[in-house]
Image (cartoon, rainbow, N blue to C red):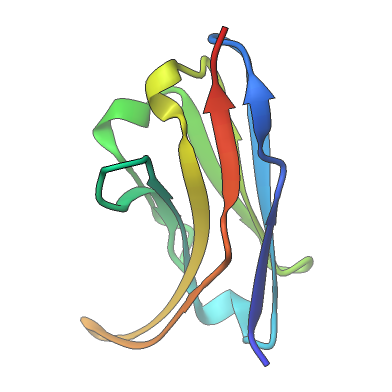
Length: 120
């Protein structure tokens, strides 16, 4: 059974930092592209950051320079270090695991999400 379990969300003030973690089980973690998505109320879910099995990374333009995604294959865990948080970063953050074959997504798994609220 595949599980992606997020942790580390919470309420912070603007300018503060948070680190999200996502622990995966039931998959061969090292071959998956791991990503963090977010969804704010009334908005579509969007990709925040992703790291491939080859450690290539990509980021949403609005978080570049503030957020860093990393993975630890030995711990089957992906992290999202978020700094200089802004109120517009407020959302539910979801962990995602995708297994690609060429450009095709063979498997796609989601966590349940963790709330991040940035407010003074």
